[in-house]
Every structure is written in C-alpha cells, then in structure tokens.
Image (cartoon, rainbow, N blue to C red; front, top):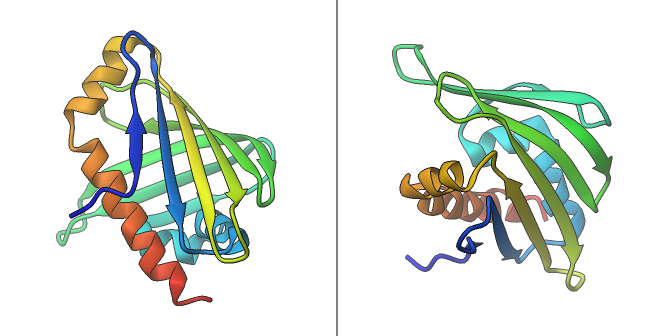
Length: 155
C-alpha cells in the first residue's frame, strides 16, 4: 500500500513533520479533527472530551472486546483557529512517553483539495527515535486513509 502520509525526521532533531494532501475541501478536513462523531469514525476510538477552543481539553479512549482500556490519550488545546490551525499537547496514558507538542496546520490547495502539516516536538531526540521504532508511520498513514474514506462521504 502506498504511503500518502509523509514523515520527515531529520537526524539530530527532536521533531517530526508529517504531511498529507487530501482530496477534500479544507473545511471538511478541518471538521475531521473537531467533530467528535467524525473523529471516532476515522480514528476508531471513543471521544470522551473534545473542547475546540483555547485552553480546551481533549481525551480519547479505545477499549477491546472485553471492555478493557487499551489506549487512552489526552491533552490541552493551546491555539484554535478554524480551518487554519490547532496547537495542542498529546499524552498517551500508561506509556513511558512524556507529553509531546503538536502543531496542526490546515491549508487549502484548491476548492477540492487540502493539505495537513503536523509538526510534533518530543522532549528529546531519543524519544522521537523511539517513537519511530513503533509502527507509527504505518498507523498514521492508515488513519489518514480512513479519514479520507470517511470524510469523502460527507461531500
């Protein structure tokens, strides 16, 4: 499967830059990140909280068939500009990874296409490199493919 989501990880830097172009109008791409029912569909997780405003918070949770929590993440939204950007923290609970900082920028390419750029800043280069050892790239590409599929139906 082609990876349409690109990840740039420069040696010696504690950041990743993720880019993806979508066959979606800018407004629909942005909605995929701020409307709980859409987020749940493409991420395959439950949205417990999503306060889209400066100093708002968010929390997502995934459970297995037995109801056990297998993933929980949360953070604070520091900047929120509709159809432009979201700056937030991201913390995976019950993992050795500390909080990371995420800058999401949404860009209109044409009436029917848009681009998402995510800059993620980690506490250290070692932690960033540890994250890259996980199936992170494959996972985010799969999630973005699902986002494209789910949100295309809303056009």
